[in-house]
Image: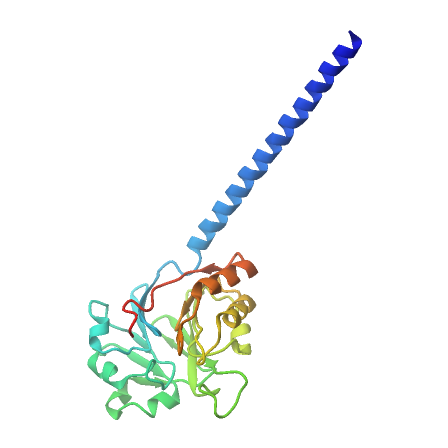
Length: 271
């Protein structure tokens, strides 16, 4: 009888341990689900809440930030901007045809627009646009309409005189308003000036060979300066499109707190 009672007691103890273990497992699973959900919500909220990004193609986009509108590297003629709000600011990064197009600038309504360009771009634009131009060199800043705009270097590594993008010719830009900061890389690699950026809320980073950098190099650059959100752009290269899904995977593996947003920069696949 004593043996039977002992066996029953042992069975009850083992059953209790099993139930407790299952309960702890369920609690751990539930907690992990809550943490994952919270992280996803934080990623969705990452960035700049009153900033709307409207890709046009490749490096060309419309940004509506509050009541002000930015165009970056407008090309494609006025038709490319049909239905879009008129620009208050136009940011041109470099002299190449996928960034600078005089005919597009001349076709747009620039009545209220300031066109911010590096010196090399100014030298290639028609003189009739001069009254609209603000020339900025690397490191210079501008305050206008509540925005601070700073010109950031963009160039290839290693630095050589025959590189497609030499240091000092083109500008990336950091645009800031009310403590929120947007970075537009322009044609660059993961240069020290990118890696040393701080407190970037939204970053647009180029990645296309042989003109800028591959996705793994772009991911390493992003992991160095840790923006709250990064958007790959300018990712059509000589041999097709860069693997932006791989870029997203690399960034997520390196830092789950960085949100990666993939937008359609090539709606017609022919630009």
